[in-house]
Length: 283
Ligand SMILES: Cc1cc2nc3c(=O)[nH]c(=O)nc-3n(C[C@H](O)[C@H](O)[C@H](O)COP(=O)(O)O)c2cc1C
Image 1 (cartoon, rainbow, N blue to C red):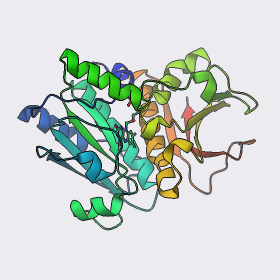
Image 2 (tube, helix red, strand yellow):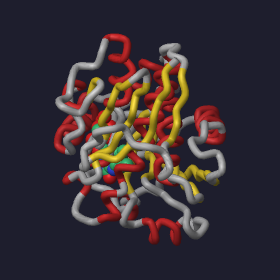
Image 3 (spheres, helix red, strand yellow):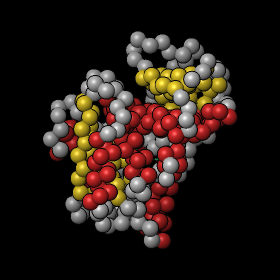
Image 4 (cartoon, rainbow, N blue to C red):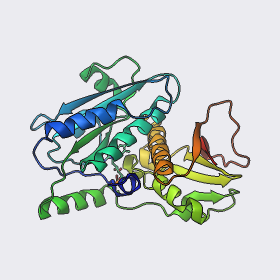
């Protein structure tokens, strides 16, 4: 499967075939995880692959929501660093996800914000290590029942829908959202199809003077009321950035991604409810 197709066809799978992946595939996954591109190279990134112990309730242990049935494996990854550790983690983990999809492996993120202390203790992670979400993976259950269960769980967790491009894209000004111009349509589509906790889709896009700005809703009702859970927007924003970066590569759109820091100016007219995350300078 080519890279762009993998970005679009990734979806969360929650019902797995109850059997481990073969050794070669697991070795390829380890290799993928060891070679993902960093967003912030000075951040430390570590991952561990684990088999699910039969009967283990991963959702309860990790603090996620919903139900997953018989996933054989999961990946615990974390970043340590001062600069955007959650954005960087989302950015790296989405690359792993999409490359797994290219191998025919199914995936689903399980959020762990709000449970990070427990996760650090359980997996003996470095103090301060950030784990926004785990990645469960294996082969999807392809029986009719398995597919039906997957579709039902996906629908009930609100994952089957996405905001339309014309709800989240601004062309030049923030007056009203607009349909992206043709040359950006595929790129924006890759960004908007990113997975997010509770399918919150916190991303917004601004196209101005040859730059594509990635913005985040500062507060999203779908994340819940605590400020800790609101931090999912950074993990999800990193995922969206990874999709944009991979799509640029797949679509042969040269450009570079600039993660914004506190000293960087915001786009003029930015509404209060949004915060800028990154600027993509397209050549
Ligand atoms: C950070 C994060 C945490 C998530 N946590 C869970 C979870 O705990 N349980 C679950 O069933 N799905 C979880 N998901 C999957 C989302 O519900 C899913 O990505 C979203 O509904 C969009 O659907 P899709 O991935 O099928 O496109 C999570 C996704 C992300 C990015």
